[in-house]
Length: 455
Image (spheres, rainbow, N blue to C red):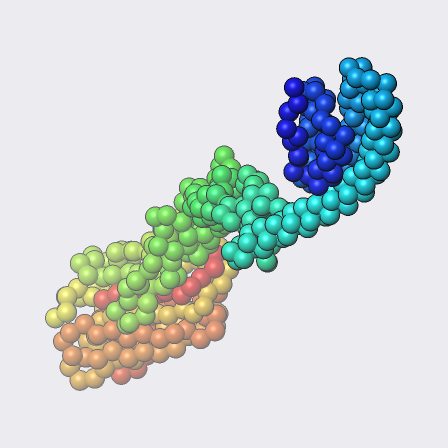
């Protein structure tokens, strides 16, 4: 039974099929083989085979198969018919073979050209599509490198070596920032400070946090250099603490108003390290040194006045005593007598009489000045009295003062010239003698002051 000839869509195989049909289509198997072979070649060309050699091979194989089918068909025909038909079939087969060969070559060329053109067109289309796709991706305005946005992790750094968030730029690439390293002297993410040391009291702690400031060497702070502290402090357990107050060591400490480094009670800073507010004697001389005083108020004899001394550690009654004595004493010429005067009890020293305060200064090294102040009045209704104040041990070195005769206690004094009271001399005196005016002195008190002495 003969079936209608099927023509593949490919032009090459249409030609082959036409040739086969002209010789008479064969049985189902031959027709199917041709049709399948043709279809394969057509599919190969349509799908854009990239290489022309593949298309040529397919076309040759198809042509060969077609020729074989044609020959088989002719042979079958000759088997059922006369010898004349055999010759015709033979001729027809030869003709079909030649035709198929020619058709195969033609198909090869056609397939080659078609495949090449198709592959070229397909490649061009793919290239165009790819180009278009790239253009579309770029047209959005987002600069990418292989799908990696600059500034993001693992991507190129932004201009200026910048990265997004906490990332850092290393060798042109954004990477995770390394964890902060406290103590390297660089303030990093997560650190409030980094001074490169582990001093907990310099404002930045060893954990790189803001901390207290405690200057080394000051009170309550670490010792400077391990064992040194500021004045008045000592290093104890690595910390500077206040020393126990020692008055006279020259360092003002807690509980002291002052400390001038000496034990003199007569200067601006007392021997108790308190600020001095000096009192004054009756003549107005400051009590800023060592002094002794005699007072005849209520005394029973010119040899027994009331004695008093400055409260100066290291210089008291014993330091005023003359050689061979334990305390100062009175010597007199006349002798003077005691009198009850309108101003009270006084030592009555008349003309030609004198009274001496005997003392020594063996431990005294020096002094700034020496003053003498006497109180009393002239025992006369007519005139005042002139009184000599001198040291007989030094040739009566000294001077004069004058007291009024009014009925009240008067005070008069002088600054002794030079060193009229001799430092280091252990036997000397202050001689009090009326020499002018009424010539009669009612003596109430007498004071000798050595201002700012060194002893």
